[in-house]
Amino acid sequence: MQAIPIRMLNELAYCERLYHLMHVQGIFEASADTIEGTGQHERAERRRRPSDAGQGLWDLAPQSLHLGDELLGIVGKLDAIRFQEDGYWEPIESKHSSAPRGERSFRLGDWELDGCAWPNDQVQLCAQGLLLKANGFPSESGRIYYRGNKKTVRVAFSEDLVAATLAMIQRARELENASMPAPLVNSEKCFRCSLNSICLPDETIRLTRPERESVSIRNIVPSRDDLGTVYVSEPGSRLGKRGFELTITMKDGTQSEVPLKDIRHISLFGNVQISTQLMHECMESGISVSFLTSAGRLVGVNHPLVTKNVLVRREQFRKFDDERERLVLARSVVRAKILNQRTLLRRNARDMDKSVLGDLFEHARRVEQASSMESLLGIEGIAAKQYMQAFPAMLKVGKVPPGETLMNGRNRRPPKDPVNALLSLAYSLLERDVYAALAAVGLDPLLGFYHRIENGRPSLVLDMMEPFRAIVADSVVIRTLNTGEVSWDDFYVGQESCSLKSPGRKRFFQAYERRMHEKVTHPVFEYKLSYRRMMELEARFLSRYLMGELPEYRPIVTR
Image 1 (cartoon, rainbow, N blue to C red):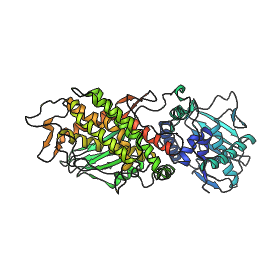
Image 2: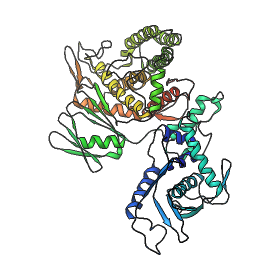
Image 3: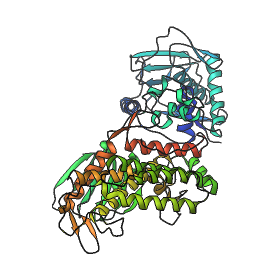
Image 4: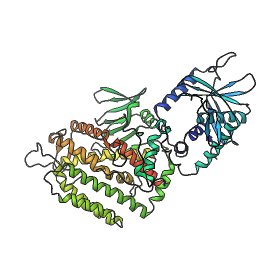
């Protein structure tokens, strides 16, 4: 039986759902508070020195103490302990937050706790005292230093506190083999939680309750992150690490630096080298690295050896083995894809036969009635053909040489005209981003429910891309061509292939990132999110559906 880390009892007393996400599913995401707290613990560790008689509270033991007990079933690290004159030992904890006012006691289940410290902090401290006692160090109390208001609080290990702590240990055991607890309802705790964008409390309630339309969605989830994507496509470039910075050395010797803390993802195109030290740092820091050919085809994405949340992958393999389950999910993504294509045409097409919009709407309706994968593929194929035939109506011709054309149907491998060259590149970038979102959630990007499973083919990525192809990738292509950000002169156009030159490629990368950072109103939750955040949201909702928390998975459909 695996021992429960005592720090997880703090999370459990704070919120059972948070405990399940962190301890059972193995998900952690740093926040400003957790980063600051880690830094403060490290600084305190460096300052610690052997204690002498008469020293103050924070001149404590020279080293941290690691303890465990099989009977209690807990294990943990005690940052500091203090020996008292009466022969008892006190565990010492420090917290980033402020101490409560202490005007009233707290209730934790059936037990009454002192109002001088937060209940979850008291449980963690009491667990440390129980570990000390079990290992031969008598302990009847502990102390917590709250940095927020610089207050030291003494916590006596009362009968109620000990009983509450033992109950928390027992509850932790029960949750290890239980489904994820329901989210807190309208709780202020959610605003300070480091996993609020993963837990999605209000969104989950909206999607699971019959009266969900009346559930208000609070602005908890960040609309977008401030991290960036680094693109390196210059042949002969080398990437390395110096301190806490990414270094990029060009073939001519010029060098630039980017702080690693500001990076989400690194994309390498063609003949670009990356050092082993940087790869290690990226995997430890959660920075994904994608490798693409010089033509823009995705070859692979690196991630750590042990990815998050094996439980969701177990359910993914189980449910994707069920043909009916796969068909239900496939109908959802194909319907969303067709409706989003229709929306893009409705917004941008000129001089187009308007009957196409009616046809696409009818195809989306027929998708919901498809009885097999074969019939679904047929409907999708007809819709895709009509959409691509109408695609040129969304483009401004601009400066195109006589006898040339921007687009001649959909062609690829290799693309033969500028529009198809941009579409292929945009789909590769989209594939990379969806891959990263699925891997971050813990899903296996290779095992899908709609696209055929082949060795080395990211089938689930291709499945989840479908609703985003029109509203992200196609939209970027249309915008860059219509605004002149990318023009005919930016392409190498041959008899059998067409490719984008380096200056045009850099501008296209910038346009793609602008689109991914663009904030739009979510059609269900009605708050603004970037498209990159929406992809993360879709991956999480699919995982929650597979885990049985959500009754259905409905991909995003723009209005």
